[in-house]
Length: 268
Length: 299
Ligand SMILES: Nc1ncnc2c1ncn2[C@@H]1O[C@H](COP(=O)(O)OP(=O)(O)O)[C@@H](O)[C@H]1O
Ligand SMILES: [Mg+2]
View (cartoon, rainbow over the protein chains, first blue to last red):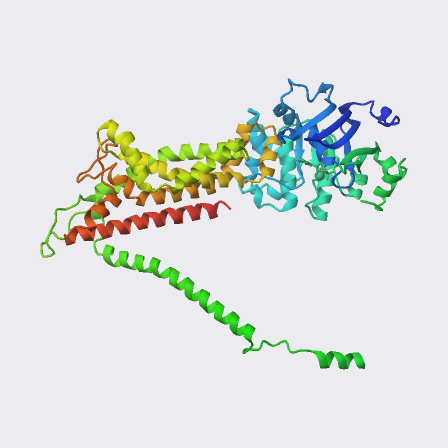
């Protein structure tokens, strides 16, 4: 979208969207999304609520397919493949592109079974205990739960539950982890733990994160997309990307006045 | 200065005045509500009291191991002998057959209703028929099973009673199981889909296990209701004075035994009927306690 991004994106592009318009029925929720999401980096989506951040991020793993009225115009490519081509299996997509949600949503099963759920679906043949331990360790949760893997995941604290959900997403060894406001329901200390975790995960995964928290975006992300929303003459509020660039640029020298106002807290 | 005066002079007392209309009214209403609650409990307590007084006398292991006795005079030394072991087994058998039919049907129907047809016209009309079915008098279920099974197999049987009771249990199971499945948070479904689960892996692996306590509650309530039903069993299973484990033969049940024995002039049969009634109520109670226990344990 922005020319100076090109060089940075030389590395590798995981997602590329091309004039993406997203609809719920006849309501155009988001328009004209053209962006590239680089590999092994953290890309943050910021913007006022209702501007379509969740809608866009859910297109990346085809989770919106569960909503009957949902459809798109335009294209999304994942490593060069058209994600919405008719022969693409959304189930396969979601196995490679994991997701962590706003509200921690562990299954009402044991901690162990929460992690093992995904690998079992895939028919994982290796050492399950080892995979569970490794996944929990990568989510910086091992010390909290190593003595109680058989107890319910839903009995953990909110911050631990969210790290359990991250571990659960990691366990299926995805390429990408999408996170939709993963810290919105967490206290500040748990939030910092998750942010530290993001930096570690970035080594191996591509991360797209929606956040309401400006500090979080500026501290942890490499690229930031600022979304805004605009009402048309019929009163439909359609979201769009105002500016997408390296995080330092968005926060220190944005090109648009709206971005400047949003990141400095004067709006939204 | 002035402000202090003001606050002192205008400070109204915060004490409750016992005699004010407001307080009196509130006390009287509380009293009336309490009295109504007690009155509502009287029939239940009276019922349990009667059952215990009349049924307890005969309670003992022989009830479950012996066959019903012939009529005896209270003076007879054999007055206290005999039991209803065959009817107890028969009730377990008919309810077991009914459960084996209605639980799978009911649970699959509710999976369909909550997971595949939610908010569709089809689900609406199935719900409507379920409600109608739950309002149909139980004797009609008996007539249905009589026509469908007793007449075609030319024999009264536990199987016929099981079918009648299954139809009776079905609406309870479908309704509670559908509610339990629908109340599974959509976040859990999304979590499963997000991990690459297919529709059916999500339902069997996440939604159904999360809904199990609610489903079990529904099943228990259905079982408890079916166990005590009389009308549909008296002309499907009929009765049997002897032991019977063949589901295609006439079979004794506790409720039919109460029906048959309570109205006779024989004191020992009347006592057996009381004891059978007590055992039935105990079964219902156990089913309810079990379902509560399972629901709470799973939280
Ligand atoms: N399932 C849905 N059906 C219809 N409209 C929806 C649905 N989900 C979101 N929307 C609408 O799409 C717009 C963008 O929502 P969302 O993506 O949740 O915004 P954000 O995550 O930025 O707060 C909003 O106007 C919202 O009302
Ligand atoms: Mg959102």
